[in-house]
Amino acid sequence: MTITLFCISLLLCAAYTNSNPCDPNNLRDPKTLRPDQLTVLINGYSESRIPLLQSIAATYASSPIVSSVQILWGNPKTSIKILTLLSQNLSIAYPGAPIAVIRQKNDSLNSRFNPRRSISTRAVLICDDDVETDVKSIEFAFTMWSKNRDKLIGFFGRSHDLDLINRKWMYTMHSDKYSIVLTKFMIARIEFLYFYRCGGDVAMAKAREVVDRRRNCEDILMNFVAAEEGEGVMVVEAERVRDYGDSRNEGRSGVESVGLSSRKKDHRKRRGECITEFHRVLGRMPLRYSYGKVVRSVGEQGLCEKGGKLVPCDRQFVD
Image (spheres, rainbow, N blue to C red):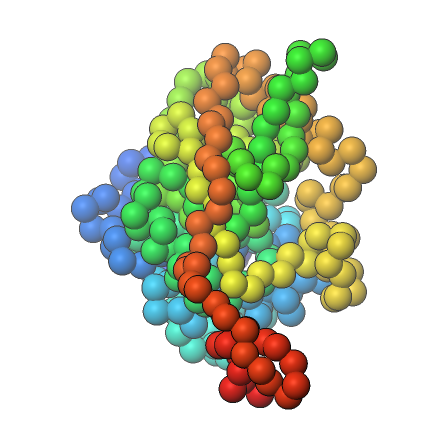
């Protein structure tokens, strides 16, 4: 019954028929994966965010570099009726790349990194259901990934630091150096998904258990994987991005206060504890710093008069 109701598209069926995401027989031949497009994986959880989620999914689907948009629904309490209606609305109302809703088998945050046969591209864009951005910024980030395929590319940079007195790692922010990009917007090569979910040894399995126990920090663990198996991170600047999950950026009622990771008290402390625990169970600290942000262009800009005021010259004739 469940499979029948959710087989609105082949992508939805795949969530149930692919019982073992690490079975090589369930994965595509890497030689067939497209290098010129990406697959968008949006983590969905809260029913109150569905209107925003639909808008975000439509923006991604409108870009020619997007092969498909897959909404990974992780809330097991959401009714079949709601997700069926969401899937039908997305398939009818929005042109562009196909959009599918895939109901996860559980609410584990590790599941957002499952290798999937429905992924037909070399790159995956992993993002949240409360972050809006523009198509130009998406395409710029993908261009930078295409030139740096062993890095995680993202808009939101964070850092790790060592508390020498307490001998613990800290989760923090710096204006000029980064060692972590968040899954609010993260582009990665598909192999990183396999390394995260299926690679490694007993230690990596224990690290995934930390994510399940804390219901947090899957993004930090992915950064450990990228530093170990690739070349770390690169932070790029978006022309326009709005994070509705940020408490400083309220604007849609209820959006900023829901989800698995909405607990704000001691947020940095808990994240620092994750870094310390990952270091302990993995036995190594692979996170490395990158410096500065990559921007689309830095042009020479003068000031021109407009209405008796001085404005940047490229805005002189803009209404």
